[in-house]
Image 1 (tube, rainbow, N blue to C red):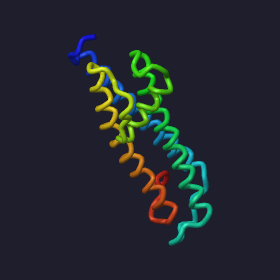
Image 2: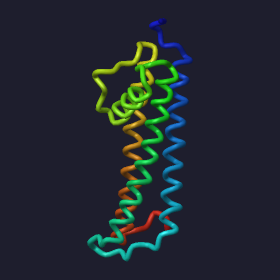
Image 3: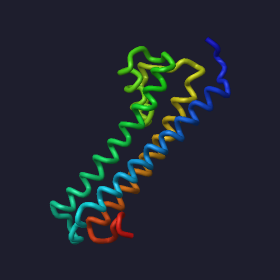
Image 4: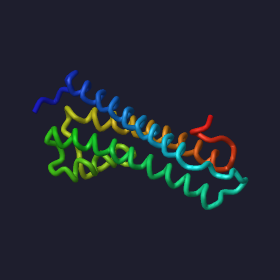
Amino acid sequence: MDEVISPLHFLRSAGMVVATVIVQAGAQIALSRVLEKLPPPRGRRHLDHYGVLHILVAVMILMLGMVAEITLWGLLYFSWGELGRFGNAVYFSLASFTTVGATELTLSPPHRMAGALESAVGMLMFGWSTALLFEVIQGARGKSHPSRG
């Protein structure tokens, strides 16, 4: 196998970064639409059960988006014939996305750039999700509401 990282390897990885951002944006849109349909929390200083429900809904939607993003990267690794089974490819993707790293699994040299880019975009997606979740929490406490302004 060629040990050189070709422009095609980089372009595939860059395409995956774009796909990851699209999925994340889709999760944000889904979150906004779901929150628009729910009555707003009462906005007390301390969270009540309904405010916690709002936060739980937000966490579940954002987690579904991240699972989709991780699975996309796993499909890429699997389509390259990397890491053997599909489960290994998804596990490697999860470990890369969360920046934990899967020391027992490694990509071949030409594909290592993809794992590094997945880690970078994973950090960004966690930051983005954290910002959205913070906005939902603020809304549940009456500070603002993400779907209403």
